[in-house]
Image (cartoon, rainbow, N blue to C red; front, side, top):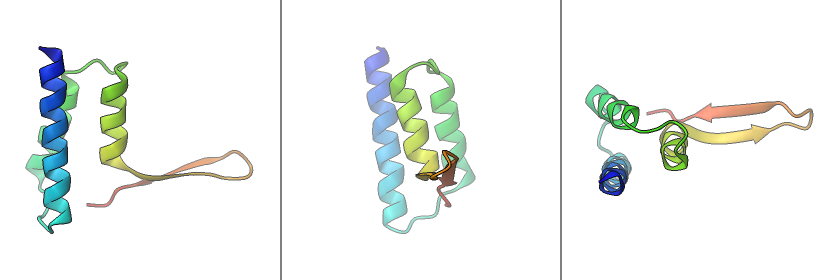
Length: 75
């Protein structure tokens, strides 16, 4: 059953990404649905970690001095 929930979550994420690419506005409901979805999963699950990163992080920069800068996605 967990595999089905993961697949459903992936499909919902892909749908949201396609809507954004087509110019549809990201609404509060989209963010709430995403956060509600991932709150039901184990935070140690690598798939959940990847979903969070794919949806919230645009870029990661590693500076010469070792500092890490994360650029958030702007909706």
